[in-house]
Picture (tube, rainbow, N blue to C red):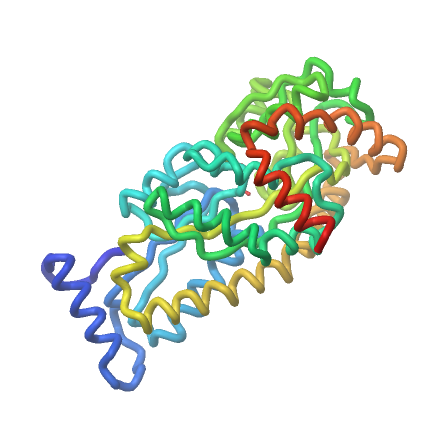
Amino acid sequence: MSTQAPRPMPRRQWLAACAGAALLPVARAAVAQPQITLRFSHVVAEETPKGLAANRFKVLVEQRSGGRIGVQVFPNAQLYGDADEMQALQLGAVDLVAPSLSKFGRIGLPEFELFDLPFLFDDLAAVRRITLGPLGQRLLQGLERHGLVGLGYFDNGFKQMSANRALLAPQDFVGLRMRVQASQVIAAQMRALGARPVTLAFSETRLALATGVVNGTENPVSNFWTQAMHQVQTDLSLTNHGYLGYAVVTNQRLWHYLGMEDRALINQALQEALGFANQIADAQNDNALAALRQAGTTRVHTLSTVQREHLRQAVQPVQQQLASRLGKRWLQDLHNALHNG
Ligand code: LMR
């Protein structure tokens, strides 16, 4: 959060001024300069569900505050990437991030890697039983131990596998170096397929594929396409083997110092932006797949039911292998939420 005051004003005095301004019954005339600016940092392209959600959030907040609250969006890891975005948030260098749920294990919240269990969710309705239910809220509450506030979840979609060979059966993965997010569950998934997981930041993945540091990776098609991975991957298999979603996170200092009215305005705008993202995420991935087919650079493989079942069986041991990391109570609650409604 940055101030636009002509001279530095002590933060507490400035926050009091903002809070006071928020309470003044003045007309919400558009103001030339925002009195508070929220910095929203993320690692993907703008033309993705997350990029579009961040931009929608910006528009809604600035419109509804009459410009009193500004939002600066920094896409494509311009400011911070996988390795430092969460720390930057904790230090107050940025005000909002929206990491993949796979990236919370690395800050001491391994239970978030529940979402990474392969073949866990049959569809997005199953995901909503977690993210919109008590389990999802309990997961977000864990962020408070780290000085953070989880504000909500939203989708990218289901992940596909890519490499420079067709990945249709477990044996096709043997020996491949596969880029993964920083998730022990995803690493175990790749090892179960006979591949070697290589954890890399998202922003480094395209170059690592181009230079042969890694042979393949996994992601929803919108990320695969917008990072031009199709130029360096000859094959994409539509495995739908796992889910990629996000949580929007802010830091407690900011959240607790905002006036009630500003907090409500920001939260309402965010919830609407997340709903918008969920509405367009499927279309974003479908459009990316259509563009990929049109580009003709990459063979797109649809797996048969039998082929997909063989993949599922190969990675089935992952849950047991990671049960102690994920937590038996979390696993029980997850399966209850998924199968007992
Ligand atoms: C990845 O690192 O592959 C994804 O989490 C990137 C993203 O934020 O969608």
